[in-house]
Length: 179
Image 1 (cartoon, rainbow, N blue to C red):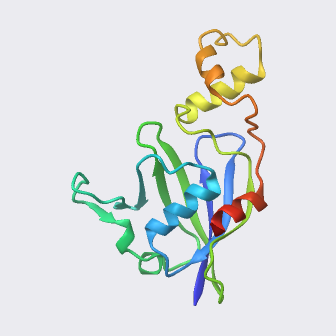
Image 2: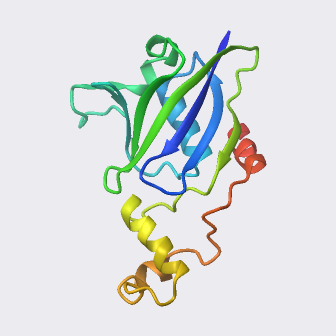
């Protein structure tokens, strides 16, 4: 049996938010999405889609475009054959959280469980407006005299005051992966 080691990075966010994790090569793209949701810290409350070149793999229902293939019917090993293969993941079609994914390593293992190996920084909160608005929120939050402070007061009030953009807890993520 093989496991795939991936690195997923959230695009357009500085400093970067990223995770490194392993998952069985026999898992489906649907399972990969579930793992990405957990390791990144998303709530899985929005639509998502994978892009492998021009191929689209995602959540399939009666409203899905014909070109989108059902993520629950496609195993990772059927599409991902070589290390250093790059592809994309889009989460929340309104906020457009784009993720870059690279298959870093293909390893032999008897362990089928997904497991997070490393990561940096906290994922933005759900519905925070996408990368540009999130980055602006961080700048305004950090600077009480920021020129847009008054304009963004509603967003600032909406965010949990305890939110720490630098926080990442590997043990907590791995505990969530086992439940």
